[in-house]
Image 1 (cartoon, rainbow, N blue to C red):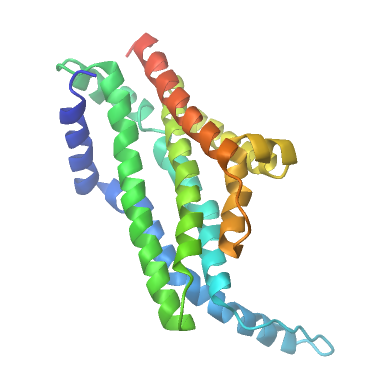
Image 2: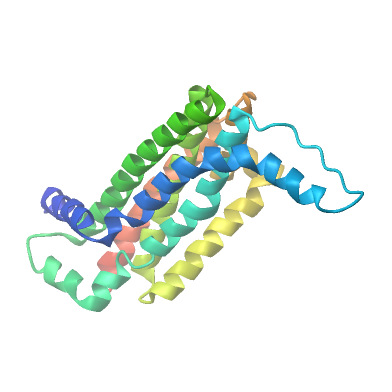
Amino acid sequence: MTGLAAFLRKELTEIRRTWRLWVIPGILLFLGLTSPIIAAVTPGLVQSMSGSRPGVVIHIPPATVLDASAQFLKNLDQFVLIAVVIAGAGVVSGERASGTATLALTKPLSRAAFVVAKILSQVMLLVAATALGTAICLGVTVVVFKGSDAGRLVTAVALWLLYASLLVVVMTLFSAAFRSRGAAAGAGLGFYFLTLLFSSWGPAARYSFSGLMPAMSHALTGQPLSLGWSLTTAVAAIALGALAAVRIFEQQEL
């Protein structure tokens, strides 16, 4: 891992000084601010729309703290994970295409350190932005609903963050394997949708990281969680994915 610390500092500095600081963090902050508000106004909006149609009456109970948390978590699944795929598609292939990877590797920097620094910098950014977005969501929820259920939301977001970190590793792997950003993004979207598909299949949900998806909803509603296999397979997939990304990048010509 020659040069890992120095290259990781370079990656973090680059994040602070470029558009990367504003994409995923900006989305998370926006969702943290707006999700409780959207949850609060949705019942009234739906009822007002139904009132404009004669004979159509829709009764929707007032929104609750659970609705605000569920809205935030749904937005994480729908928007932030897609952003992770798009942003991660060029994390290696983009540097290889522009020639900056070749320049960096002429320094005392190993290819393994190059890949690992890419993964660590993305995960660190994601963790910090998610923590801030969740804190804002909880604060707005307290203001709008006069209360919150911080424990359940934090548990659900922690499970989401584990899957999001796995997706970061997978995108780094695809970005190292494909020279085209489009191909890496397509493969990443395929992985994401396959996870969603398998999360609705009982055996896969019980014995693989696909179980993290339903576990998020269960955490929000206070249902019992059985996470042994989901956590174990997620951590194993992160480790194996990172190792595969390093091995693929080591064997490729720049």
